[in-house]
Image 1 (tube, rainbow, N blue to C red):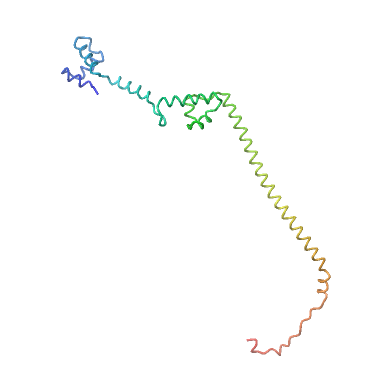
Image 2 (image 1 turned 180 degrees about the vertical axis):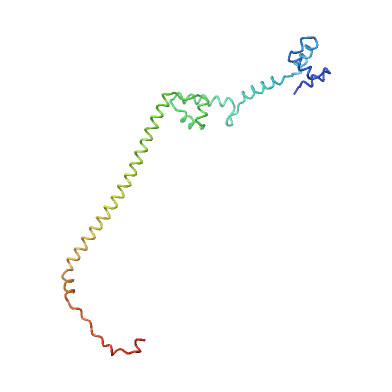
Length: 197
């Protein structure tokens, strides 16, 4: 890279003198013209010119998630096509794999009508989800109630069968209940003391 020092060495003068000549602060004498021509001939660029050139080059080769400037323009045109098809920023972001903020930065905010429609759609979805949750809760309650009713009916059937068996066996039970219980008398003197031990 060519610097002021190279030009100063060539003319055997100080770098500040060369700087003033190149910036136009030192008049338009023959020596100044000679220094400017030499600087142009060897391709010298001032710091401001180099910074400006670097900015332009950076803008021409903007890297954006692994892509160059032309890819960025293709992506932007794809975003605009999707917008024209009626997609919202969120939907566009999902389709192309970017964030909604990136989409907004590249093609601007979505139209107000679209935002209004999206809000209404979101409201309908929330209402549907809320109704579905309420329905699921009520279905769970109904299932639990039906299970209780089924258990109750099963117990009723078993109780009815037991009552039938009881009525069928009632005469036998009454006969058994009326009969005296015969307990043989036990002779305590007949028991051997050794047998107890």
